[in-house]
Length: 222
Image (cartoon, rainbow, N blue to C red; front, side, top):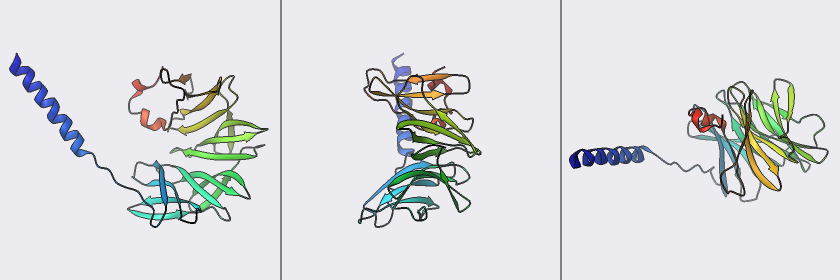
């Protein structure tokens, strides 16, 4: 019995060691930038984000095949990229004349993403179908949104004064944040259900990237 336990423990430790050894970490630093933040990665390993130059200007970037490319919305004072899909389409935020707007970069063409009536907006993610999610300000209230084709859907968690949509997966499930009693919580919305996500005893819960959860449906509330 002791021998069996010893062999089991040895095999477990060996499997853990092999798994840990297989992991690799790579620094992502845009050349000559003072800081770099990576926000999105697609199934091809292409990475999107933004960097800050020593002069404090902010630019988006795409890292593809080990090469960096700056992403700048025409005429904008700053550009930040947050989402990338398998086709390489990018979604993010740019600032023009002090106002932030969402954008899509697809096929070399920029498109502004501003839900009707909004005075500020930002795009956070894009899925394989080209659906874009983010948040916007309308009449002083922050709402989440989903853009499918040319149709905008405003997303508000029930009874919340502020709602955000952070990401969307291939089948259209979305996750985001909402505010309740001055506490930020998260939610998952599927076509058939809406579930709050709250880490026990936490004062803040943020959920990002439902495509990560799709590999293990048991991690999602039913």
